[in-house]
Structure formats: structure tokens, C-alpha cells
Image (cartoon, rainbow over all chains, first blue to last red; front, side):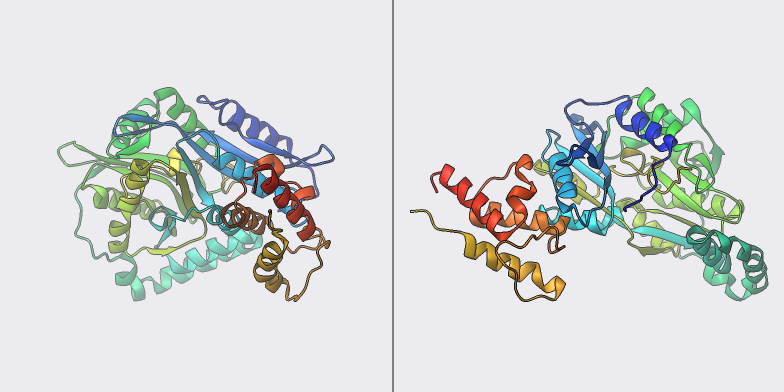
Length: 342
Length: 87
């Protein structure tokens, strides 16, 4: 997007913090700027280092995103060079989690394809009128005045569509849920991530840093993290999402133990509904698609996840759905995705 | 003897870029960038064509207006690369 006004100072310091002061910064895989022929900065692509493990073996991964070009219509070479430069870097795996249509078109021209099972956005609606008002308010602040009317509409019409909204094709799940943060959350996420053949090679410090930055996202409300356990206390999973009463909740991460995906998804939806969200949305992971379908979520695509790798084992892990490469593992946690800078 | 690739490049650009602008012709010296005939996706489409069909290897630093702004520039650049490769 071409903007004439100067970027806010808070954005400049945020870029420095995220891309230059990342705890796993890798000088061989830096972010890039495009300098035009007059010596001015004409574009930028952010690169987040994302060390991973594939069946215990280290994988050098780079998350490329936040591609921005000053006046791309007049300067189409900038975006092409920036993306091509990152893709041809020394990493084993390049990931773009939230490529828009233009970026995706560029990845495709270089031979990479979108990954539908990692790309689709899911939405589970609890209160249809509230959902419509919240969706409008995201684009037009003035639409916030519709919320009280929407709330009344949902309350009045609720009995008419109760079974369609609150029913589920899934059997009831027994679980206990507890809000957690800090070291407990980190320990659970580390443990759950290992259920994927390809997963982040996190250390506690990096994950703490990542979660701290994720918690600074403001647009969708407060970040809430929960652990889900079986009645006997066995770890089933974790969910991390943002919500405010009367708003549309936004899921950053759902991780579960094997065969517990449906229970963890049920816990997430139950909690969001109980705390007043009008709907919940997030990005699918291959293992959550079926439980979400049974929970009557609907699916759409507004951004694509795409990878590039020459390693057939990495490609096979991704293709089989055995890869944890989105959310906290990629770039959804940064404020550049969906937040505003004043 | 090296074959001039200009006609192949022209054919590629006419087939892939002109229809988007509802145009039928473009001169050899007309700027593809300034006239909006080639966007960032188109640049990579052209790069892929030059690498796979014309057979040259392109460095990122070579993706500059001097090499990519017109059919003439692209052809001169491609012919230069081919001649260096013994094309």
C-alpha cells in the first residue's frame, strides 16, 4: 500500500525490535531493504529466524513476511527482487504464513504453491447479528454503534436458531480447563510442539520473548491462554486466543496431544462462547480441520501459507500435515499482522 | 552462431502482459514499467521465462530497469548473457 504520511515512530521501533533484536537473529538470513537508483529505501521484507527440528534433526527456517514497497505500481522490480532474494537464501525452509494475493502470485511464479490445509481461515459464529456488526466494525469504526442492536437481535432471535448455532455433530467432551501463563504455558507449548515431526526448535527464552510480543497485540482484545486436561489430569492441549466481550475472538494457536484435537477445539469454543465472544476465528492446522468441521465452523481464504524447500523430507512432513509451521511458529504473533500503529 | 531472442521475448510479453491492459501492440523501446504493463508478479513471470525458456541464469542484482524496462533492454540483456555463456 502506498501511504504518503510518515510511519509512526512506534512502528519504526517495533520493526527494530522484532527483526533486528530477535533472540535467534541469524546474520545469514537478514531482513532486506530495497534501495532504489536514487539511493532511497523503496521496499522492505521482514525475515524472522525460525530454527526447527525435523525428526530431531536441525532445520534452518526463515519466515518471510511484511513485504512492503513504496509505490509498487511504479516500481514492480522492488517486490520481485526482495522476495526472490529471501527465497534464495541459505535456509532449508522458507515460510510465508499470511501471503496476500499479490505476494502469493509472486510465490507461484517462482514455482511454489499455497498450502490449503495450513491457509484456510475458520470462523465459528455464536451470535449472527453480533458477528455481522463486529465484522463491519473492523472496517468501519462507526459500525460499533450497531452492537447494542445486534445484541438485542441475537437475544430475541436466539431461540429460533439455537440448535443450528449451539449444536454440534461432535459428541460431548469431558475435560478441565485452566488459565495459565509464564513458565507453565511455555512448558506445555514446548511439550505439545513435539507431537509434530517438523516443529520449532524453541528454547524457553525465545518462546517467552515470542509470547510477550504476542501479548502486545491489541486489536482483538486481551490474550488468554489455557491448558486443557483430561478428567484424570493428562495434558490434552493448549489454546491461545484474543477476545473481548461482544467482539470476534481471534485464535493464535491451538496445540493438542495426539487424538485430543477435538477436545481442545471444543474447549476453545466453549470458553469463547462463555466469555461473550460473538464468533471465533483462526487459521486451520491440518489436524484441526475435521474437529472444526464437526463444530460447524465455516472456512474461507483471505491469506495463504506457502513454503519453499528443496528438501524432500521437509516437503513430505508439510504435505502429510505433520508440520507445526504457523501461528507462534511463524509470524501471526507479530503486531504487523492485524494490529494498528498510532 | 547466436540466435537473437528478441522475437521470443516479444511473443512472451504480447501473450502474457498486453491482454491485461487491453492492448494489441507494444514497441521495442516502450517502457514496460512506466506504462504499467508489467507488475511485480509479471517481473517474476518474465524472470522464470528467461531462465527456463531462454536458458540464462539471472542474479537478483541484475533485475534492474536497464535490463527489464523494454523489449529492447530485455533482449540486449538476454543476448549479452547468452554470448557470455557461449550461447
